[in-house]
Image (cartoon, rainbow, N blue to C red):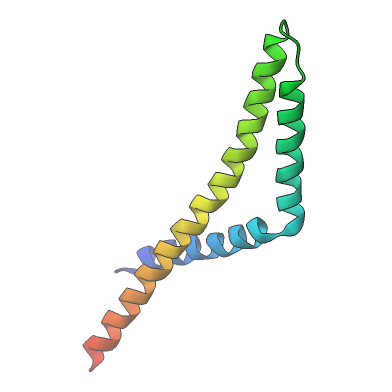
Length: 97
């Protein structure tokens, strides 16, 4: 593994740590929950002729989920990067002995 690969893995790990802090932040969780509730309630309260409004609310509801999912993907990528770095460090230790 060369330095650029290690740098990339370290960057992924750093981003994962930041994403985890955000994801676990009660304020962000509360914001996601409030937005989902707002969009779903608004969606169910649209009239039969309000197709455009329903579509926009459905998109907005899904965007909240996509943002949350993106944070989880970054966290998972960081877990993989951490494992790769750990494996690399262990292989170096074994080579020294």
